[in-house]
Image (tube, rainbow, N blue to C red; front, side):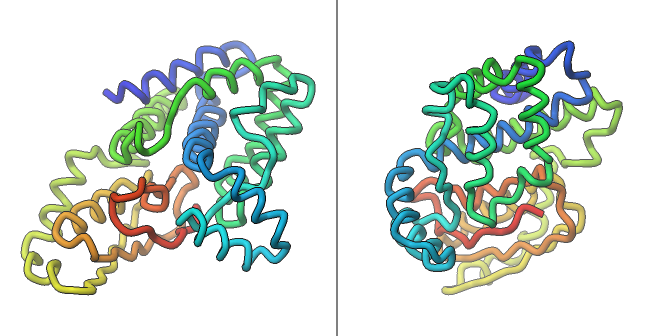
Length: 261
């Protein structure tokens, strides 16, 4: 069981009453994603705001942000978990501003229709309490590894689907099973994987939480730290958050953003 996932899911207890158990995931999943991104962006937030003020062209801004931070995505809002709670009366509006000020490639909150949930939480008098709970969790990749974050997501999705009387296996495959599949996939490719400049394309026809793609890249980088994996996915559900794009410095080369579709 994921300890982190269990702790995050426990926040759902605050939703009892206004929300039914099968609706908890509509709040918990996007807020988990938002907090993960918030922790990643925090060290460079002021620099990005300066760049946003200097460059109106979004294409040029993205180039400058990537040069400054190494990341292809950013947020231009003046708000974050660090200061959202300082304006109690404007919390809902400020949170909406925060999710709307992400660069265009971070479109996951649109798929969750999260602005609707923000208004519902405010109406139920729960928004401040839930945001306060998530503010207390540090989800930066140097604190919570990609693997642990993946396990937490799988645990949350399983709990969400159990509450909705669905089969969690429809959305993800257990990590141990994925590792076995990846080992088998690369079993006879040892020599190829160690060549300079190697590029391999991986197709996951049933991508759920993206664990297959993330673990396959980790396996590939174990053989060759300069290798590059190019994931190919069909229509992917919005619960995929590619940890490949938020990897801490020193843990392999950074990748271009893969849209959360």
